[in-house]
Length: 321
Image (cartoon, rainbow, N blue to C red; front, side, top):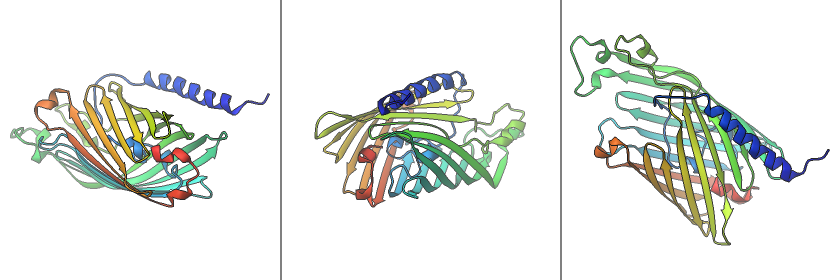
């Protein structure tokens, strides 16, 4: 029996929803996220999903800078620079990322390499399987903890010197001209705070297993307006599920305006400008509604993306995701 492309597409989406529901049952209780956070991940998901490498079918350079919880001492600061490209007529994606992630007395920086295999599964649908392999330089110095030092307390006299740890991630990514779905784990190895397990104070390691699910759809309102609702579901072992609900509106394919809601955390505003065929600039502002709002002026994030050969891309709506 011959299946139509339409039926295949429906089957992929239905299977994805069933898979997402099954995944939800694997996670529960107590928040503990350690992967870097990005508000504008929907415009370049390479740092979230290795299978995204090469999906834009052009050579692209992406820069992210995020200052989280401004005004709060020791708040997270993340910088990322990545480059990716497809080769072999779009069947293979390659990428590399350099990053720095600072959080209080913890400092992690490193490099990741990405490889994806891209298979055309329908007239417009492409399924990618991706792998990332890298090295993380990790440092931790509890002597820098403010207002918590107690003589004789081993918890606050511990230093983890600079050390290189391996990192491995995996992902699946399916997309058409108007729809995308991704499931990934950027890091499956426990490479942060591992020595905390030995502390008598009971502080636990926080580099637990992360699983991210991303999904979005482009709705054409008219020739000048496109609407793009999307979501990210973040799941961490031993933590409650966290949702990001996003809505972005693109005007004349030049200006993008968006709002997001992150459960239990913050509301976000975003603005993107397609300055030229090759250059895009974006900004995001997060305002927490959690108890942190009394101590911070919010979070700021900038994104700069430059692409070479964008006019040769075979995917019309690649610019949206």
